[in-house]
Image (tube, rainbow, N blue to C red):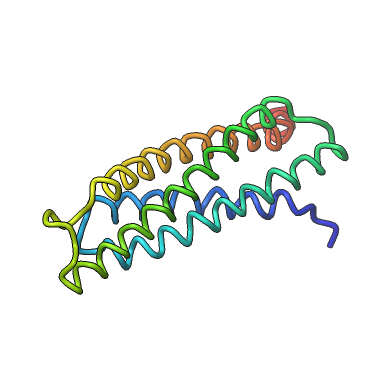
Length: 157
């Protein structure tokens, strides 16, 4: 149908990264849902990272055809980096949380229930999720402005 891949895949990134961030932050700070919600959050963080990567590559290819949206592309690299860092930290935290959960079930968990490493990784994943959301907004907003500015001008005329 001659639709470029970029406008299709960016919507996955724009939805998955913030949703994953909310789920990971919830799981990090709410012990009752940690394992179940953390699993979904970690998987969505990975899918969001992959979506960002595909959006980045397809956007570069689309720019060669339609021209370079400079402001939008200026946010693309930091947004991709933020998504990658968030995805890696979310998965690292979740693996630690699951290992501690299993150790607790066996009675071999640390005395305080959570290790310092798992707490620090959870906090870092949460912060990285917020940062990834900010960059997702910035890159998405600049892209939307680039696409829809001509439409707004045409409607106003």
